[in-house]
Length: 244
Image 1 (spheres, rainbow, N blue to C red):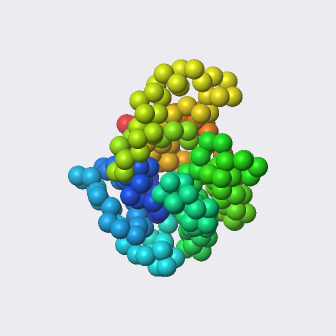
Image 2 (cartoon, helix red, strand yellow; image 1 turned 60 degrees about the vertical axis):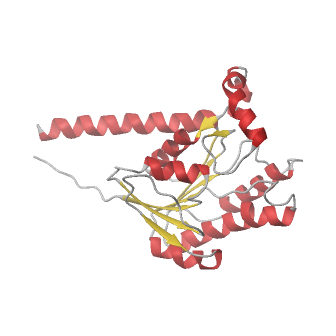
């Protein structure tokens, strides 16, 4: 009988208290192939059965906290909103560009080989919308970093339970199932995605070993999950055949 033991993938999550970060934590419950460590400014509410570390530190201490996490993969799910930033460009950039890029630099310094960052559909250096332009500038800066592999996810509207109230977004979430049916072709990338699905995509990508820089919009995000599920099924089948 042949038995191959695989070392769990160490994921450092930055942005643990947001919608995507919370979904990723829940998705890791019961998984022995993932070792999740979160870095956060405040305590994250952990789901029942969670087995993970949460390193609490102010932003000024995040470099040391990320180093202590010893990540194989750094997942950045940071982000604020234009409203929460007080509609101030400098305050918005401080989180969605500077802090995102700084965290990525700290992850690289800590030894992470793989970066996965959640951006936004429509991110573009030339966008007139400040939100999308800053996202595009952050992507540009992340691309310059010497990670072995970088995955940039550009989801549309992310559906899921948010801690804060966003009335307009709540209306958009209700309308999204109908709106998604109308989005085809190049517009399909604007379809909504549930935070749980996004978390599954993050975990699927964390298992990938191919070198490169990849940008994933709606269709690619779903394909990443299907591809990983197929690969997992094949490995289990092969392992079963070997051990029989």
